[in-house]
Image 1: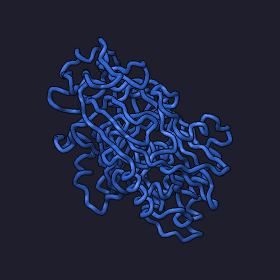
Image 2: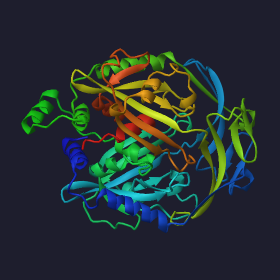
Image 3: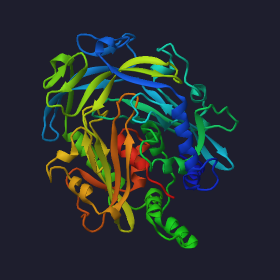
Image 4: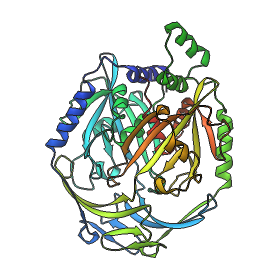
Length: 470
């Protein structure tokens, strides 16, 4: 990413005045968008799913497109549980998650969509300009093409500001990736009724509220780089402008400074390479009805102990979608989860405790994950001391909580799944020596890994997107 692009992103992330709408205006607009769209989501039986059926192995769509629910048997030498069965979403096609941006009054604005997904707890959330699987935009569903698709399909190289393949939830998707892309236009374009221009600063502020910005927006925003500077340059400008250091300026320093870190990038890569070489992940497809500890009936696929998640069937009617009525299977969580980063100043620079984590759907065995990530187990019932940093995050002093809100998972596949997202600023009570499989990383180092795809999982990227500089 060249310096001009990084500067334009940074300018948009810092801008607090030159904006079309206030935060109250945006929230009111989202509320109105919710009120004008007719939505009806009902659980149904698998027998009543239109165009879906069970074959000998899986739950599939008659077109052979979209996705399937497969049964898998997992074997690994990672962790305490060496083998298990589970259902998983198999969606091999790569979709678009994309923003159109445009400079308005000298500031880069993002064209955001008020989009309803059947699994959203509050229906309408801020999504990217384009959010579409290949089956959607190739019109397998026989509906309309998504708005603004042609801008991405015809984008010239000089228009592309960001272009990455990033993973989805590794415990729920089998090697799923999406193309996260941001393009810039110069010309005026039509802004449809359920779209609005927002600055990056506004998007990040909206993420401080519960369930207003969807997961797809968060993953695209997380990939943005704001530039690489040496520590002397950043400290010089702080001195010139006499900036009083606060948590936002500390986040910005950790994002911009590229020549300092508790560990070098080479050291971190070596550690990750060692883990990927030491641990195995074997995935075999098995019939859904043959999964050990799981049951399949006409209404759900569930674990015998009612743990982890379920597969359910829903019938959907949404008035402003490319297709207004359809049926599909969805993943329903059994409990809410918790994702948290613990950060700490080391040698005057904020570092984040990042864990290396193996999940069965990972594209390359292991990815970097938040300090705490509990999505499939009920974190409230985890025995004290069994999960590093969980007790600390749950009992931390309020003044050390920098960020805490409830955010939804992807509403196109997950039914009313929401997880608490937290960022905690630790002091001397957290040692610089971390447990095995954890490393300290600056935001700049994490941003560097994002450029190369499949290094940071989606939970880590979601938390990174929430970090604001204002």
